[in-house]
Length: 362
Image 1 (cartoon, rainbow, N blue to C red):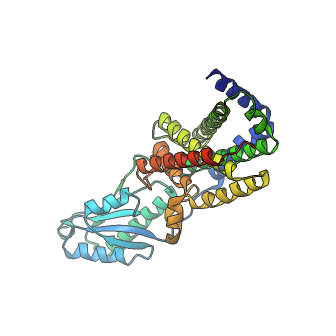
Image 2: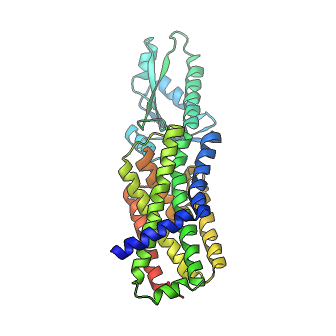
Image 3: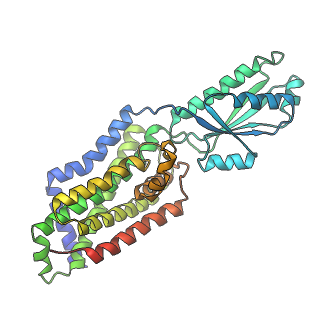
């Protein structure tokens, strides 16, 4: 074990002394988090899926339900209170509007009745406020027909999360996931292929040094860098942009380690398949490009076309970004946490086994 630690310390010194690698390892994700934090303001969604629950069997309740059905930005889905709230918590709809029982009777007797609205502010706070404004405007227009009470209908708002998530809250875990992906691909595959191409691995393989110790020290180095990247990104997000970490930092660190391990294993697999530095760069770029834009690290997965769903579900970065959002900022999950962790662990194990089978030292 002392040999592994000595190699690990030597690798850290080599990495720290390489100012170019040190700069880009930390500067690239920092530039992203600062850039998006300063200029990203979100964009309005052209359509919102609304779960409409009409528990009132009177004329006012039915008329209000028809009014919501005519609102252009809304796609209405009807159901029971329990079913629609469950859909909202799973991220399948954008909000739930509940027309409570007794609403018609209350309005007829001259009392103010409350229409309930439950929504999820995570992902984009601007969109959430737009939805609230639309519902309030609909009620204001509807109220104009019942002037004997001011107002006959009022809006009671409720959220399904404990905090309002801003755009940078959504982006920070995605940028962290991106940095871990690039750590595994560009900082693992290309250097290994370069060492093999320069015959360094061959000479090391001829020494009494067990090969697994060299590989273990390299993996430990990447995991250390991954934790350092996470510390920089999370710390900068909290300090500069007031991102509030909802979960445990220990849980965040655990997901970061699993994500780093997964992409380091993918990086080793790329190094096993590539014969030259040029081919390694080509493979890593081909792997990096679709995951950058199809894993939901910069925008919600719901905005992607439905035909891309099989591709999205096949990418490990999708599950890493979702897991980080759940443990870091308490976002509504795209997948259950156990599914995220199982997929990442599966990718890590399969890629590690394939790397052990095909990796060559010369």
